[in-house]
Image (cartoon, rainbow, N blue to C red):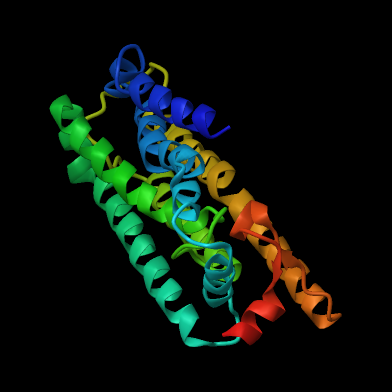
Length: 254
């Protein structure tokens, strides 16, 4: 699955940059929105799911150290181990939001429309910013500096709402945001239809990309709280954090 995700990320990144999609993106705003969504959301998500960073990290740490580090990273009692995760999530989210807003401004979109050689700069910026964000969102198979689940859900929700807000401003504007796209009266799509379709594309891709993360992390968080409330903490299994060591015993070792 990791190889499949990485292969899909590479394929999608190339497919939206070459004809026919690259030609259509210079003519229709909603196709350009799909191109943007691919670089800002789909490719980074596939990259985050496919990169084998956690497996490499698990080769460097003994099992007991993995369990202790996992307990530090995923504590939710306000311990100092939680603060670095908040800072990392805030930084990754800020980079992502800044890149998204910058490349959806009228100046940036019209510049790419008139000068296609700027597309690689947009693609690299968005993929890097999105990749940093997804390295925080994807749950680890081995301990690492990744976010606790409630924080991960909040980060994904804020990233999704940022894209929704940008798309909303464009789709429901009474005037054209991006003047470089040609719209001829009597020809499809009209200015209003093109803007509304682009809004729908961004909303749909953002929802499909980030909403599963929000639901998955919230459900896992609630399930973990319920198990802790009944005194049946789940063990930290080898599939996520190394050998089976309970989170309670790991906390006592600390």
